[in-house]
Image (spheres, helix red, strand yellow):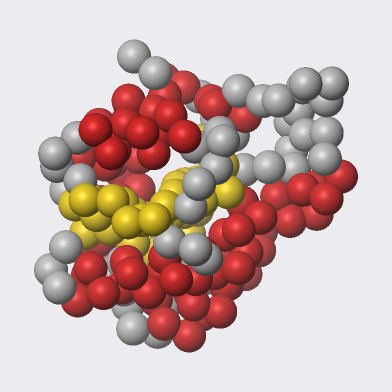
Length: 170
């Protein structure tokens, strides 16, 4: 099994029904996996903060949602987290390709991606760096269950040790 299959299995086991996403090369295996399953509805959004709004609407409509995006895009959601999801106690799961750490060659990705766990903590969004492929299914499911049991957002940061990385000369 692949990390993407395991992640989709974890989302499914925890009752996620809607997956909101922005296209990302490294996330495409997971995006394609959830699109093939009848248990998920998928919504392509144009901005990450729009994804928070769609996930909030899903929750208000009685459905659990997850959002897939890259770490640099997740930083676009900070106002939506701080002014909507956190104060209104709207649970959702963010699954984010973390850039800026191991294997990163693009200097523009480093400041945000490397510091993202601390920035999320300062905002009040709990998060977990997922760095072992064998943990993907269970920890994805646990993150969803934690978010919805506590009515708070939770972000899983997928490390390059799980998804692989693009070498500088590629």
